[in-house]
Length: 278
Image (cartoon, rainbow, N blue to C red; front, side, top):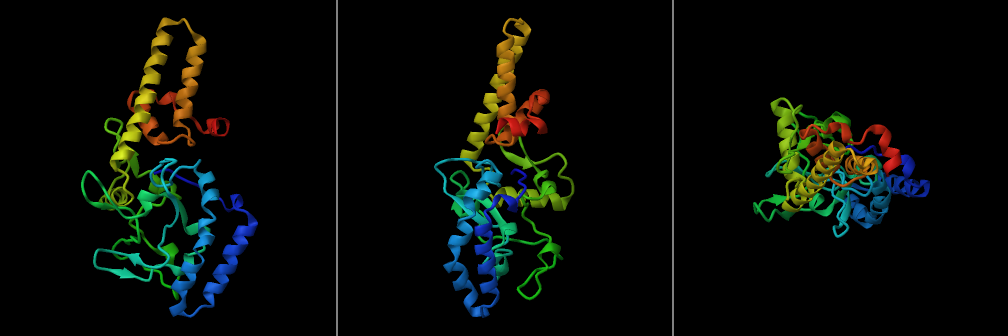
């Protein structure tokens, strides 16, 4: 999972105006007509997809995947038509957020849609899941208190949530971070890894590839430094390591985790590198 700053300034005003008009029309609908209206207007939130993608360099906000062969969705973080709270409990969800950019997340298909993990045969994918912590308020159409809710699922637009998950530098699996302390935070991280499908086999393979590449690059760099014969290669390899760990790179969290585990964190991209390596 990566932190993404959702910036409405990157969305064309015309599209924001279309969403605002749809919201106004939705507010005027009778309760029985809301779901059909939302379904009819699906093209509106789908039109946000390419703009949301720019906010994350084309990567899924949940999995950090940029697989060009994957279908990408505009996920509604709070489900727009039905919210599954547990295996036995479901309600009407958050229809008033159907056209809200604050509720959109750019998601690879397997993080957003239900599918079967080939390795475990368990169902993964967010679907309509949106459980809340025990004792949390639950927003409704007539009481839109979503800002007071305590979600179980981690939100990629909340920096503190993203910090609860890291990548194991040895096996490439998404795991609870070292600062994910306390039973509640650990449960949220574990459940999010499960529901977002963050340990599907293809993701682990992709992370391992990214980690192997930075490991090889770092070892080559150290060999050249020790020989002291090719300063151009030293500069080139350092730049490759920075590019592999900047926010625009796929699986950058895995690459960073590997370098840090090798004691080479100094070669990771720094904040000032972001604008120069996009």
